Image (cartoon, rainbow, N blue to C red; front, side):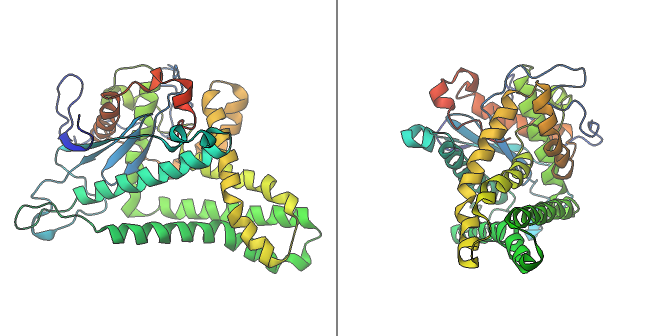
Length: 368
């Protein structure tokens, strides 16, 4: 496989993934959570594999490779500049883009330290995630009149990333502390101040998730999110990667980014509480500067939960985050699972994540 090449996705037996099948099988809401299938078969290992849903596709990441698989629309679906409707499935074949990965954590020893490795791994995941999203978006665009591939400009993506990061920091960190500051005079002490701030932050987060879960434009992305989880769970259970096998597993996963964000909200309570209620010019910057610390601790916790997913204490602590995935995942059909499998197989064609050394795994247990 070339370092970067566009290829049609074939499974390990040479079977081409076909177009979506109407009325394909869908799972029950969250059946077999915590990595078990509908017959109770548990995941045998917590693999250093993660992923992300993209537009009509899935990105999968291993230790040394990442790949994104996208189902392209047929020429008829996008003829004359037509765009797919939000709930309309692409009906074309699957295409896969695969690229090598040399982790930041592997290249720099200091980035392997606890807490630091989490920040580095998450930053790298964001970089790969935005790149995969760009690939999937470009796959949905019709070629120009000369048959040349059209792509969304780099400037557009850079501005999108900047705006997204600024809005996330503002909405989830600065707005809560701003609202709480207005109530500061009515609060009895710094501990109550921090608790109120975190209650507001978690409330904003939950309302945000509920609102986006209602958006028609994102329903198919949520279905591919479910397909990603099911495929990783199938791999972790040691079963052959087929859509039918993957469909048996839960659309919830212990290492999901949704669960990670909830852990971030909770960890922030303990990180910011010792700061008390300083002046606003210290209070507001502290919430921004403290984000890497919060993210690093949350990363270590979600790794720990994933590793001990079969333990009762871990399942209890993971339960709230698992339930939140009801908002950000939907049951996929078999054709969407075929796309997720194509992405994972592109990674497995290059590497065996389970055979990676402990050094290679450091910081690589990325969220699913």
